[in-house]
Amino acid sequence: MAAALQRAWLRRGALAIALLPLSWLFGAITALRRLAFRNGWRSSSRVAVPVIVVGNVIAGGSGKTPVVMAIVEHLKARGIDCGVVSRGYGRRTSDCRQVLPKSNAADVGDEPLLVAQACAVPVYVAPRRADAAHALLAAYPSTRAIVCDDGLQHYALARDIEVCVFDDRGIGNGWLLPAGPLRESWPRTCDLVLRTSAAPGMDGHIVHRALAGFAIDSNGVRTPLAQLQGKPVIAVAAIARPDAFFSMLRQHGLTLANTIALPDHAAFDNMHAWLAADATLLCTQKDAVKLWPQRPDALAVPLDVTIDESFWQSLDRMLDAKLSSAHGPQTA
Image (tube, rainbow, N blue to C red; front, side, top):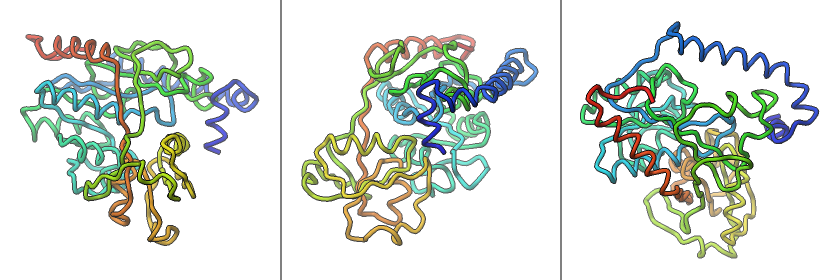
């Protein structure tokens, strides 16, 4: 069903048209929710430092977390102490907690754990991202900026800069859920837009995504992908678009003896029961945080993200204005 919807969302065919009445209802509900926050009927929580929200308006994942990690590394390079907050989608807990490098992905979410391990900055998760932001600042008062992974539609956390990310699908058929892939109508007001060069009919700064030329195991040992050419490997992915990962591996000249596509954020329980222990196993970095406890020999292939310099110039200009404000961060 999920795959059928993904295909239907790319065009205005029979299935999409049949779902239009539900999308009108969805649009009405989301519009009322935005109006409630805009008119103060529901309150937004503001924290003492600028908040950069990285999200999307299209369902099914668009590469937000790699952009979050790129922004974090950019801020660190500028000497700006920062932290990351997230809901921790798919976790089995429901409290507000810090994500540590040794945390269990099932308790904190796979993407927050990846950020904590890869970026070495404070990461907090909570059902309400505002609670995570307040907890992070209480524990790390030197923090000067917070990056929110997802949450473009989470208005309970006031934001200063909004970054909306699109992949090759653009806005699909342009309709709201469930007739189309949009969580809210587009265009909408947004500070910065990131898109792939292949996104149809989209404006915004370009983000380039490509697999690194190497894979790493749980000990950080690198294996060049070129060494795996001509050898049968198994590729597994529990991400929004697993076929994209498999396609990029093939572009590196790898022979995929088998591909295993699981739902986004899926757990890797009982992997030993259906994967041969001697199989060379490739996965994404996000999947590795769940897979390595069972298969420390699994090789994770990092995703290299390159963003046009114009984006960084615009982001720095907006952020510097917030950081230098005599009155603290203000709504963008």
